[in-house]
Image (cartoon, rainbow, N blue to C red; front, side, top):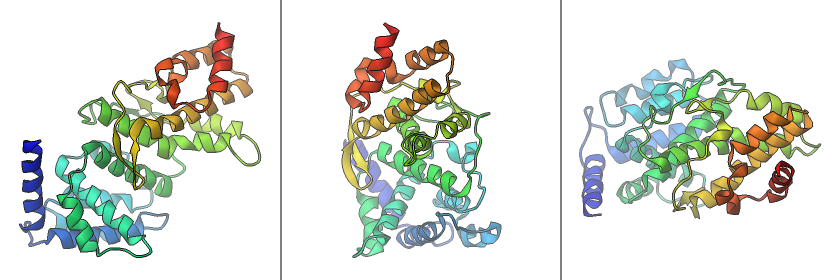
Length: 298
């Protein structure tokens, strides 16, 4: 804990007091980048001529985060390439989390002073899991806003190669990915006019492999649940995200049933996903569906 406090103190000094290569003020530039992000991360954004806006960050502590924001604001961008998909370093995660907190502040009906918000979150001890959540949440939102339709079916996202340092970091990445991109399966399942089975069947084929396996085979949640800030509220990580993952899996297996997949293929889906792993059932809101399949299997 003492070492962590010392690290945060050093980060704050470097961010708040020192200037970078080209005499940049950290607090001011965080606010400036938050404004650029807020105005351009939606469906509209910057064009390829935006380089001049970000050129001043080259050679500074802001270079990596500025490149990410620049890329994420472009239509048909490259955020899924390894340069951006890989886990950022700790300083970049800290800066980007602070930028997002300033961005959130700008949406408040009675916002605080942006500079004070930036300074507050630079000082605050934020878990790396929350920072990873914010970074990849923004990355996958950029995919939704800028890169649809997409097809990542030929990609494999190896979580060790991407630089994640423990099972929690990998799980945060994966469940944020599911929450942002996988949730389209749940949306098709819960469509107002009835389930869109064709939509689910086509969509699941577009998703990448995770560690050389189908997305639904990911089950590395072997850790005690923990609290962190999720959508501006303190929540338990698995308690919040795992029910969403279960909803995705249920939509997928029901599609297989409706589309009359081979029984062997449906059984394999069931047994290779957390649909069959009882230790996670406390997080599932669709136990009626799971029980019907498990009873049938018996």
